[in-house]
Length: 351
Image 1 (spheres, rainbow, N blue to C red):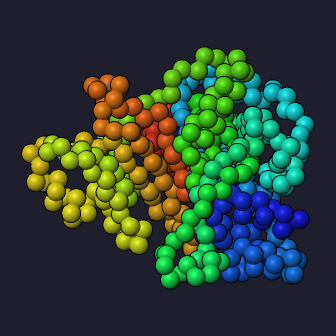
Image 2 (cartoon, rainbow, N blue to C red; image 1 turned 90 degrees about the vertical axis):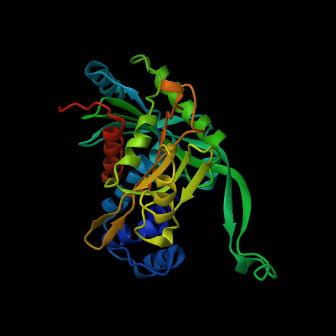
């Protein structure tokens, strides 16, 4: 049923991002998720079922991912693609439901270890999708109108929810890039320990396939400075850096400031010009505005080191993973990963 697909989309895609995509599939849009699903149940519209499935699939493959890249040769890429294509997938409730999410009862039966559920082929590459029931701590905002007597005292109230969440991971072998991609879900509110634990599971599973040696994740730190220096590349909305005077700064643009770029923001430029030497930047968040017809997409890339120094070349820190967010479709993810490849000066193949 269409309402079942919408319920799964609701579990993975924000209302703002899903609304135009669902409208393009013929879904009658109401004010928010509940009223939209009510309209579908009451009006029984003719919707693009395949299009809605694609929204859900894209969110699983590309939506809010933490990605690590590992070098591939042409030979090992072919070996990985053959191994994934020939892999025998277990028949489970998760694989039968895919791409829809499991209901609460079935989710409780899903283990906490990643299991493969689907192999996806497209013009960009080939990927193995895995899923697990991951106990996760999440911070959620509590609507003030649901708490009597608190609206006059607080602007926001947050609570911690601990419970099972169906998460996905993707082992991706691109056709035109020389890097194996290990992607895992990074939903809002997920704790860092949970993220790294999930990624560790995916890495262990990939190694267990015995296809080829998986080297260390590629260090993406060199891309940070190059994104900062290229004022024509996207819009920087947040960055961390240290100054020659010993100051450690975090600068962040408010979303409501529209097209303001932190790199060219007046206060930042004035402060930088007053220094005797350049700043040392180690954390950057870049987003791009993509407009298609009446739809607006805001894919983003977040590269973050713990501090300005570390065990990398020249005493620099290392960044072994990238957070890629705001991608409603595979096209936006591919756009961002290509931008990252350019700035990190990664190699690609023209197959």
